[in-house]
Length: 108
Length: 113
Image 1: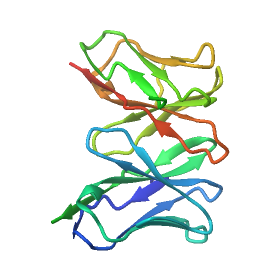
Image 2 (image 1 turned 60 degrees about the vertical axis):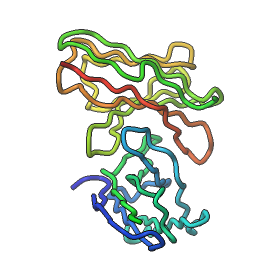
Image 3 (image 1 turned 90 degrees about the vertical axis):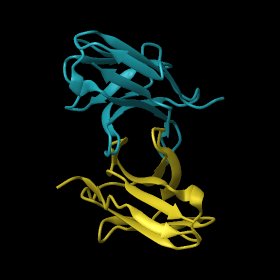
């Protein structure tokens, strides 16, 4: 079993839709969690850190469920520009363990 | 631009040659990481430094790979006797805050022919 698992998608949604991604992790000792966005052939860009209490940044909401060992990302009112791959990352002794990413396609 | 920079951005080499990549982290960051990413996968951890000390190396980092950060600032990653399986995007990241957020450079795309 991989340490961090994501549904690869693609999620194909119309503009304006709400879409949610989940990511499960196996190391219960992990303390820090992140969502990154990666465009084709570009580097990952930090989208959000994920806090125990959940956090929101505009249209994006991230939540952590320690009991079930998963993190989630909710995108509301999807824009064409949200089309990208979304990577979840779990910190383990300073290094990040990434999932394989979930691809999102937002269509007009 | 005060982000992480990497050089070169692209490298094409023949099997068996040695290559070296450079990473300049965000200036106030004391931790520097190297990752490798292949198509359809997330980045995989290779090694990391805290200041000039190399604190962890992945099992992915065979003895053909070596990394240095001699003055605790920039870092180099060298691959000796390259193999076709080394073809990947090599990403550098740095961090320095309490939250542990890592910021990535644009990567070096290596193609081994």
